[in-house]
Amino acid sequence: MNKNLIACMLGISGLALSAGGCLTNAGEAGDTEPDTSTAESNVTVCREVEHFDYVRNGAVTHWDVTFEIGTGREFVDERPVGGLDKQYRISPYWSDCPAPNEIVRLTHGTEVLIGIHDCLPDGRQEFHGSDFQRLLVPRVPFITFNCDP
Image (cartoon, rainbow, N blue to C red):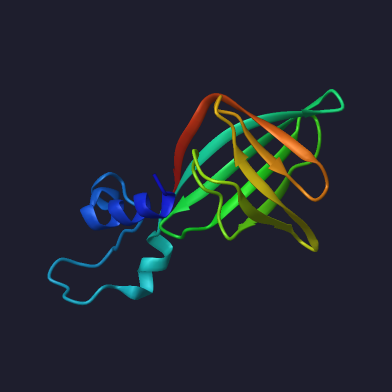
């Protein structure tokens, strides 16, 4: 199911608000207008994270695809084990599998990787980047959810 559709459904159904929610408002009882002065400071950002590993030249790298529910932001955290983290913004989006091949742009500062995101029938995924190909193997747990206050 599309992540944007999930976020929309959560917002419409009110589940996001009743379950610790993605948006809150600290207005007083009886207020008819939302308290916009405090709404920004009371926003909770919730995320769905898909966890993968890939191996290159014998080194393992964690590859976490994150979707922020409510904002629609998507990014990849690339963390070589024992190395430095790098975060890429995803454009236009990273589809859930099974999905057709899609062209994805990953941006970190001035570095831009353009490649094809592909879903394999055995649950693995690939990113054929402009730098090199990553065979993404799901980790356990594969999907996690977290919220920041």
